Length: 217
Image 1 (cartoon, rainbow, N blue to C red):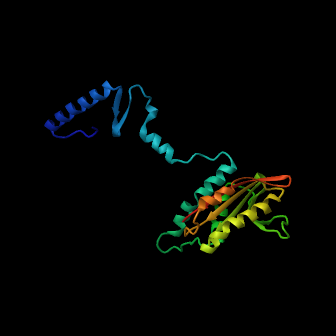
Image 2 (cartoon, rainbow, N blue to C red):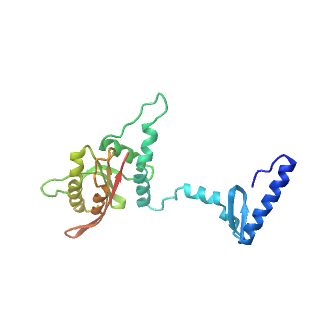
Image 3 (cartoon, rainbow, N blue to C red):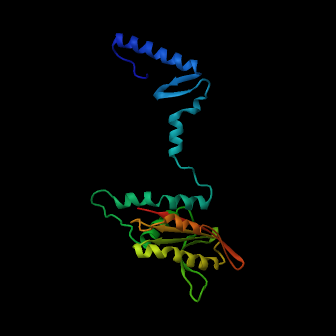
């Protein structure tokens, strides 16, 4: 429809065929536009299909810190790719443990969040305290990371998170706990089961909102 033939005879057949198609479309209240777009007659030009696709490919600008952290977490695997497969001669990075994931997460957060505190201790719970991976005090948000080491550890991750939730619920500055479970080798047999931990968890007069994200390689 869009490419006009050079040959005069072919051009005439192309012109007649195009006119027939346009007439059939018009009978149904439609109109043909370049690049294969067929739209209802009277539809505004901003309905351009190409523009709509391009707009969907551009992520919306985050409006809150929660949205920033969500984009960072959901984009971790994509962020790992160019560092794992670097250009020839450059040293590659391998994300095989919690520290690797934490370093990448920290680097991605710092341009967006002024105060990111790493490894701050929680108040004592059941006779011991623990260290938070990241604490964003201005936003009452704690981020905890787990890296599934093997199949045996995969069975224990849920219990570890339950204990972590109890610790963080005792922290006066933690109102939101986002748990990032990195499972590069797919050792978790039921990753959706961990998401059952999502929701509000109460301890005494405190409450913490929990979200769980499972990230694969």
